[in-house]
Length: 110
Image 1 (tube, rainbow, N blue to C red):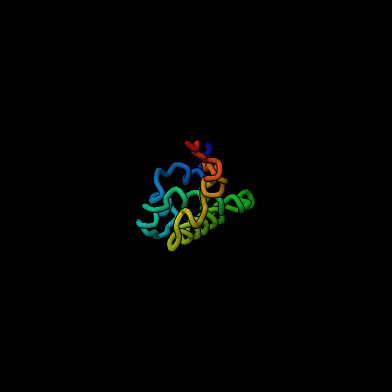
Image 2: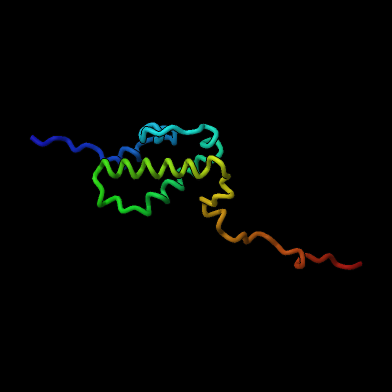
């Protein structure tokens, strides 16, 4: 008889439905004001931190600890800063193409 395969830490994380659930799963406290202000940015930054780590060489405890570290750091990044200042999302790092320089706007002389 084969035992059913238990889910990995990453699989369990993917099934969570909110940032608050992720903090609970990883046994971390959080500031609701930070999540209200920068929820998407915190999650994106956590993903960026995790992408820098080769999780395939870690056991499940190591993956859990790395995910915990990444989320804790991502939350800390936004405790005393704004999403715009942190530039976590691509929108803040791309040049804005919808700006027209004032020299290009000329009114016809009458």
